[in-house]
Length: 252
Image 1 (spheres, rainbow, N blue to C red):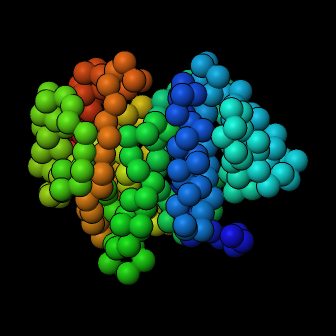
Image 2: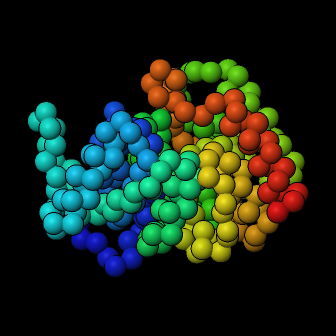
């Protein structure tokens, strides 16, 4: 598949200690039949992710088409992957800002480096934008897509944070804290983001609500993981989420 100078998609993948899943998620992204570039931002990983990504970057710099993988897992294309390294761990929001700055695609999608979200949902995410109906699309885990059954109190907390956000933005979103968000690139270029961690979610929602952007939601699938499997968000991020929701809607 040839790459245009301006690809259809820029997929931004923030990475922090995801060596167990980074290879597979990149393979899954590559398997999506859409013209794209993949921007991987390592946020100071210390579990081998950084070394793996350094290998990808080296292959890309040598103009290799693919990187051989161990354990008879075939090859991973590198010709449409760009890797960036943060000098220290700063948080998901900081990694996303770096990726957004480097993005060249018409549409920018956020993709976590774990396996909770399925890249095959990209087609549904970009459809309202391609049809000229939306400037921003949120993928909602609560609109009917298949999902793994996990934490009750996480769902309650998500609902409360989303409700608080909706009260202040006057939007009727069902899932503010979803990873899957798709933006026209010019939308991201028009807003100033500051949050370094998971506060990115309410911050970007508040920024978009204050603009004239047309926002859609579409159902997505979701396979949540447990803390034993590497989940990172905690109750502390919930309290930070409340503060960020208030701050960026009322004081920014």
